Image (cartoon, rainbow, N blue to C red; front, top):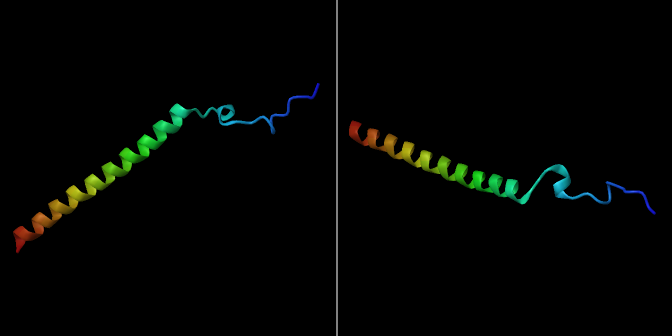
Length: 55
């Protein structure tokens, strides 16, 4: 019988990575990028509104 070689029999679950954790990271990146864009838009509109009031 051949000895077990972990270099050959290596998979993502051996590192503790599951489909659930991958999905959480992807969803977190999507929500984070959306939140950054929304915050940038709000700040931009706020500053644009203050600039128009001064003119």
